[in-house]
Length: 188
Image (cartoon, rainbow, N blue to C red):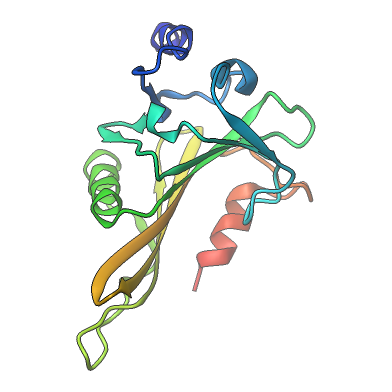
């Protein structure tokens, strides 16, 4: 697996190469991983309290079979003490079809999630608005949290999501487990 990541990183400067975020071990160096890409720094990524590196080239990444798109946002969360250590990543997805695709991929690969908030119910006008949140344990080192906001744009149903993939050992700036911070925001 390390060989695959090394090859992907070596090729990352090629415009058409996509890096699979699912393959990251979080042992990669952020600056090397994003070398040659347009990035920006954030002192605090909302919801995590951690600094991050955001990417303008989000279509250069994919998660398993789900390809990144130019309108996705990808952020690598930095360790508060070691700016090159990856604590996790955040992918913001604002395309309804892609949100459904990532949910179905996670469910097929990692099983049924722990549901923090169930699907919102329909109102009397047949509209479905609200928030859902799902938690998967990907492996012994990582978990994933998918939060989805259901709404409407010109009477067309939309789903806007944040996908967090986090190292289980990651701590927020207050030295609390990051999984607790994130799930606290979505636990009923």
